[in-house]
Amino acid sequence: MGVAALFFYLFATVTVASAFMVIASRNPVHSVLFLILAFFNAAGLFMLTGAEFLALILIVVYVGAVAVLFLFVVMMLDVDFAEMREGFLQYLPIGGIIGIILLVELIFVLGTTFVDPQAASVAVQPIPDMAETSNIKAIGDLLYTRYIFFFQLAGIILLVAMIGAIVLTLSHRTDVKRQNIADQVARDPEDAITMHKVKPGEGI
Amino acid sequence: MDAAFFDSYIWPVLVILFQSVLLLVLLLVFVAYILYADRKIFAAVQLRRGPNVVGPWGLLQSFADLLKFVVKEPIIPASANKGVFLLAPLVAGVLALSAWAVIPVADGWSVADPNLGLLFVFAISSLEVYGIIMGGWASNSKYPFLASLRSAAQMVSYEVSIGFVIITVLLCVGSLNLTDVVNAQQDGLGTRLGMPVNSFLDWHWLALFPMFIIFFISAIAETNRPPFDLPEAESELVAGHMVEYSSTPFLLFFLGEFVAITLMCALTTLLFLGGWLPIIDIAPFNWLPGIFWFVLKGMFVFFCMAMVRSIVPRYRYDQLMRLGWKVFLPISLFMVFITAFVLQYMGWAQS
Image (tube, chains in turn red, cyan):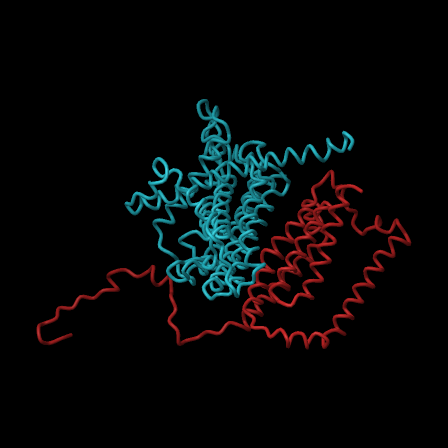
């Protein structure tokens, strides 16, 4: 057994164990932390297959940004743990169905490899040799030529979602004073100060 | 155990171990003096003497502080979440140190030189927020919690502009390898404008000047240095996420923060100030070894950060967010387009 295999089993075991802990731990913040551990080990698995770009992007995007926001929200929740326990059974059927669907898909993927070992090599787009091009280049070549339409579509969907979220949450309050930086910078002493000569005993 | 196994696994591991220990020791001694320099500069701006008691001119002050922290009693609050409470400073300290593994301090002098070194450093620096969030939440106290909420928003915001700055540099270089980033600056704008020798005008700071400034300011915000030290603003939050920490856990937080600062200085040096390249590539300057130039430039960036810290008053939180999202993000996004356009139009793009 090579060192790569050893690391594969290490990462895979920790991924599965921490994924289990995500749903098993009592404290939601611990769940998010275990989720982050699972992401890390998934990144390790990507590294082992030679996809170091995907591994680092997984860490930057999911661990560095998405999971931070998760943690941000979960930390602020005031969760009643006993109530959460009760709700667990209620969602079990839906969760179970999704789990079974995923399991069946996995069996199909593995099954094709067992039935026809050649199946994996007949990919739609041939995977370039890792020794010749770096995987970042290979991804770029595919993403910006063959899949450019889907890439831009995904971008537009994200943009629409972002605008939707802003529209739903943006409320312009008129009863608060706001700072207008441009106004402040544009002010000069002539407009801001007026001189009055006040005669004694009269006031302004 | 046969010789082939030793040659392919044991020996490289031993070499990497030795290099890592050497780098760590030098880095930690350096951090001790960076801390001292920070306090001295801060004092000089305020017309004070600064630390001057321990050792000649106070040079051993940082080591005295280290000893003090280590021998103190670590106190864990009764209602704290003990595991996460102790994990947080470890995360902060270890992550900051681990990014140094890929920083080349001179040509070929790095523990590892992966293809995606720049992305690795970016990934690690985007994780440094976890130490603060975990520490703030696990303390189970209001000030640390507020600090962790602030830092989560602040560090995620400024990562965005740092990411775009890195993309512009990446466009100019055509590689994410840090050694390539420096070598690409050997010959650039300066020689194109007619300088006879390679000089500091070739480095990216001139060609990408607005990005250099944005990166410098974002680096200060990303490392929670004043004037962006809102997670630990002592006049509002006492010491922010570190309120409940004492002794060695506090030391680890402190160390992590300063190692992150040295990392950002090193990154600024590599991306914009030509790394280990001499200031002008002529006789007396290019005799000096690359590490000398690297350390000199890193210290210059740190001096600028220390001056910013002592001169600029702390930002208000909404101003900080406005600067990140409404000023830096549009400018850096725009500059990505401009840079790509210029490179393509002038035919300077790397293949």
